[in-house]
Length: 398
Ligand SMILES: *Cc1c(COP(=O)(O)O)cnc(C)c1O
Image 1 (cartoon, helix red, strand yellow):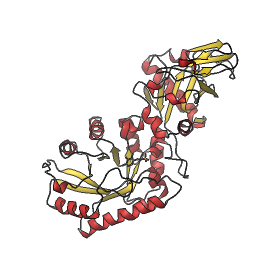
Image 2 (tube, protein in one colour):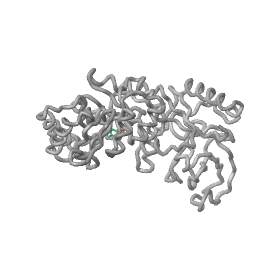
Image 3 (spheres, helix red, strand yellow):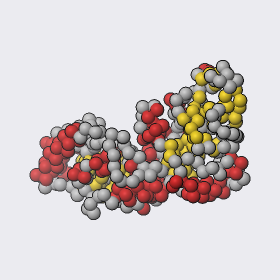
Image 4 (spheres, helix red, strand yellow):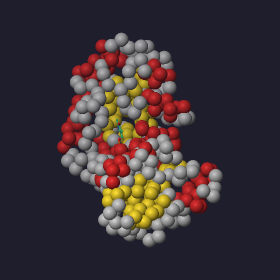
């Protein structure tokens, strides 16, 4: 690592978050952790291992590609794909022992024979209008068809909650009521599957009546709440931290434009620091003239437009900012000893060790630049910032 822009992913935080949520579930409730989109940017295989170590017993991903990547990474736990999988693609799902959702009435289609048998969860529509069968009678028909398909194993029934994080619980309770109707139909067919599930993080934390026997937790495993519209007493520790090092500090006269298009003009003689992180790293361009990073424990506003690979911050009001100072982009404030001139003393493996040691010693008492705070600047959510972090940013696991 020469550039000095990196992420520290605190796997012990993921493990602890999963364990803390696991503690709130009944003994009979399975816990699925969502590691889609590369484990919300943290690294799919690493996040999966941390989640399983924390007590998860199921993994969720968006696509069959993501599921196969987990299998190839050595993950043996059950995996459910959330997104639609075609009957043809499901041949490979069966081969990799990956569970798929049935989002349509397959009984009307020409469906291949699966060998080994395919594991399916019927997905039903209860109020999100994204995926799933809409009519309980279609589910009944599908269940009767499944009874004569020994190559397809009915493992689950599920739905997805659209507003479980909302202060208003009415839409969630309506979804639960509709879900119950689907469940009743399967019961009438004597086809109630072993695993019934509806709750995402918000559902898992807020609606214990909607746990059924599996919860699908994503964002909370990474230490954030889905929204600020509800609170929880479950202690969550953010796992994602992103840092960089100042590459230049310059004194700029008053009235000088900074960055592309001169979108910022210095209102006073200023000290402007350059930081090697930009929108190609997933550091959003909408933070131009609006965001804040932390340098030496103090906020430094982003000035001018965020470039593809770099951005500029105003350090006029900070003491003695110099080339090589560490910049906290997201997460726990950087340990004071992190300086680029120390960092470059080591080879790659040595740098990682040095960074991890400093992080572990400092992070538990360090202040936090929350992804929620940064996301709020752009009217978005922590999820989007996590997923945006590009592969160019090396992940260091602590
Ligand atoms: C992403 C996803 C989840 C996890 O949601 P969080 O809000 O991150 O907890 C659960 N279920 C499905 C179907 C999803 O797509």
